[in-house]
Length: 144
Image (cartoon, rainbow, N blue to C red; front, side, top):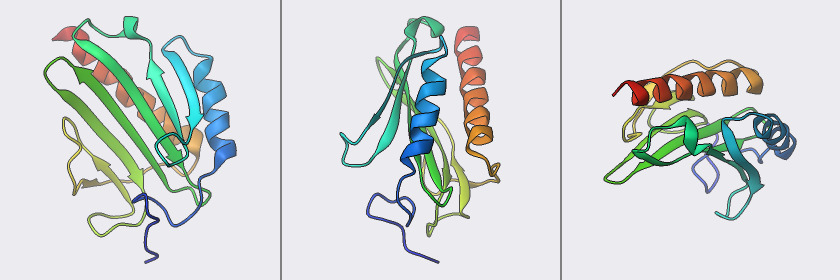
């Protein structure tokens, strides 16, 4: 197994064209208020802020951070901020000592180790799966 890079992700570099493709697609949706490719955290990633009106008032902020690597490894980290807590989960594909290469860190705390999983090969299919999961979460929030 190849050791991960310093960011705990993949041994491959970030695939900026895929991040830019996803940025363009997500900016075109009403659910997204902002999508920006940035390296402000020291790691190149796509940061997505969801439109607050899609969430009940109890959710102060909802966002998704996407890192996609040239070898198709990835980390998609969804996080909601509430007044008294955070709720988060993460879909991952990368070499690691705690799970299979494809794995999921379940809500509400995204613990490590996560759960072994199997993700689609194509980045569009992975993002679609993640957005469906987020949509299910939003539906649950509104029914609480």
